[in-house]
Length: 278
Length: 173
Image (cartoon, rainbow over all chains, first blue to last red; front, side, top):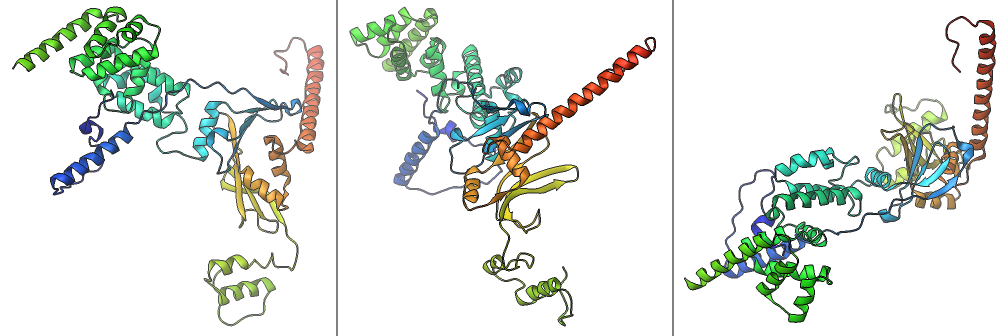
């Protein structure tokens, strides 16, 4: 369903200007090159993980009331051993009141970025990710850039990552700009979000309007896998429906925008009839 | 040290050995330089590995590196390995950031390295070692001093309040 539009996946990023590089190839070489490009594109389109929000860390290691009042600022100690994965690293905080506790997730992320910097990530997250600023970016239709920056900056289970992603998906769904994410690695995440909240009608209409019937059927099958107890899922299982019938059953039972979907389906069928007739 | 003239002048042992080093092996390979100890270290015996703070940074901006070095080296001189760092000034989030390479620290402690007192105190605060007794003593002394100051402030405040009742605001404790 993510779609494999090579022109969009490999569209030129704004880098330095270089004159175009021409190669003379035979048919076989061209096919080989296209095949390799498709494989590369598939690796680029791997979906980033969708995780639940992480539990806040709240672990006290020691309480030394004697130290209360000696220090004005807290000490943050990070274990800099090279061969430990970042998730298992010891990062502890000694508060001015003498309590030695494990660092919170935000403190952990900051310290790990200070001592083991990752490319594309900043120690203090950019102001772009605040709710007020996201609106401006969405007006410029730059949802994909925001999501790429978000993946670089935050961990997949951090609340900021989840919040930015949900905001982006909501905005796309509100304005129907599904095509912005098609053929990117964020499409899967968007579909998952919409299906788990049963808001897939707009996406379905968009797919039918673009004549992507296979995608529409896969969408409905995924919906049935996610919500097996709903009516359309049961009917589909009983009668083992395929293709357009599946969509029709779904439209009758589950969707909110029945009228729109019926219209879209009608238009599609007319288009198919005229094209097959001519 | 500038390069010396060819004629050796009678001078102190240190100057002679410096000149000798420069003349004989000015730009020798890395292995030779590593094996050659400075004359202050070459006294036949003595000197041990110590884990301590080396001060760096600029004026009014200290920065400590936690370092395993020979005890006879200069404080900021050549060290065996850097084991971490400490920023004594709090950052924008009100934290004093310290990094400790515990794996290598354990290695050097296993090799028989000593710790300087501030390093011991820092590791006590971190929880790697038990809390240093001087930290506790320092805290208790500070508390007692503050109590004494509060009492002395309270006593004259009471005294001045009794004597001059009409004059303006008294000293706030």
